[in-house]
Length: 426
Image (tube, rainbow, N blue to C red; front, top):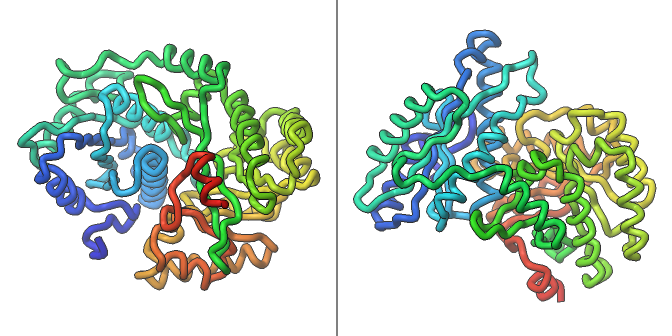
């Protein structure tokens, strides 16, 4: 979809017209795996009224970013799309096989993510309350009918205070997912070592050689299927299991690295809860030392959201780890709010450009100019730049031409198991 009419200019998501066309194509193939959710932002009008249109635009762009990242975490490439229909209304659809229980679980996890405070806003924007209606396509459905039923259900949901998610066909809806039981199941899985890792390969742009991978955690839950990304972090946060999850990930990643060729490096994500614990860097260094892994082979990735708490403590913790030889990367740079002060205040080695920074660079001079400016700033601060979400050869070439050092994305490889990653590395 290259026509500007196919995209919402504010958020970069598909437009309503493009969404209807995609749904029509999917449904015309008789695919009854199609699931869709309509997300409507409660209290959105108050943002525009109280804070102005600029603040409202910021809120919409940030919500779009969160929806996009959620889709990238949970669904395979090409099996989903997100669209902004109008105002504060968004559509997320997939044609992956998805149980009703999993679809409801994902909707609740997405609602949790959207309801998080809008960081970096100019003047204390209110928390947004998402209302979500869910549907699974039936034989003979058409886009207008599906969207109409979703809209009707969402309107009805507003009359039920405290409820965020509703199914269209209530008589066929699953029993409510028991959040407490999901949290208990995750606790048992961590105790039994039942969470696993996949590895997103990373490549040098100068010669396209494999240089390492990012470790991605996955939990295979019998009822919900594969859970990872933000959805898994939300469950862990509610159960106060975030630091335990991170330690399991670090341990598994270090164990995996021991079997890799010595020149390959591993990136591991760190959360806000981790950085809030003063003993965190010491525990990580103990694990690295006990397992005999060279700290220089490990990069810790943090997001701006993880830095919104105690920035001084985060800087000290990251400084200890960097002094021990690890590298520190600021992840998802360019997505939503960017605090450029982090670049000079924190002990960073690398910034990872969010995939949104590469969207449109082949077709729009303004987008490429923004990319060029960000990379020039990084170079001035002696920071390496990694491009995420590279899906086309054109994007890869532009990232190389503009000075990125390395990249990751579906162009070369999807997330791999340890076995498949070792085959790629051999």
